[in-house]
Length: 294
Image (tube, rainbow, N blue to C red; front, top):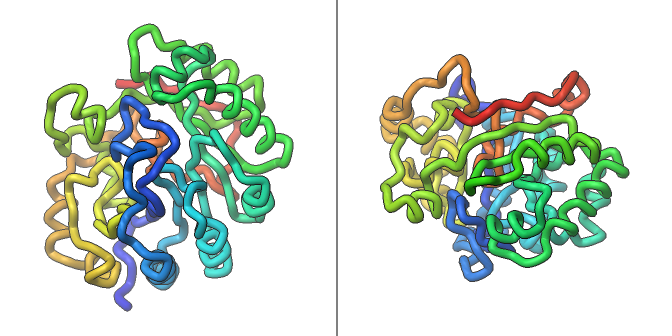
């Protein structure tokens, strides 16, 4: 297999398209009605093996809501056994008891989104009912178990209690907090009646990140699903990453800016590119960093 392209740090694996929420800004348009996707368990296992063989150091399991996939424990085992760092990006609404033991394993970290300290605002943003208390409880469980964790806050609606949310996260023991605006891709683009463009991207996708959708489509990150380079159900991941199409898409994305609130300096459940905070980076993080959206 060809050597990995220089600079690639992580691969985001959307192991299911289904979610138990339908957030207003979701970049994938996930919801309870969204299909799981056409990638089989064997397709995902082959992809994880390809990531490890390419020497990319980390995978992130996301969706949709990754904890809804019955195969998440198997994928976690495979990735860890292959020496990969693992992050699970969950909305933390419902965590099966058996998953906590998986999350406690060395090399695994968690990430979540936290929008506000107000239940009504949380329900409006996520299009659910009563989820905030469950999220709080599961954050507390993760902290109590010593699981490395970070959180992202996305500004979605007017009057959103962003500062209060950040303060509450700190009180709960979360020290890595990032703030970003809602990017106009996916459902956020639909609400804005606009087409997604590369200007909404941070510049690190394709250059540092890779994403695989529930149907196997490969792009630069979960935000850039409208820029497809190939499909792992039809090609090996290495062939896609070394293709002319991948190079063309990379060149079409603006270069990363040296400052500002772009990944990996911000985060949301629809911005999973921020995967730099897994061990050992977690142990080195001195304090929370709050960055206003640009």
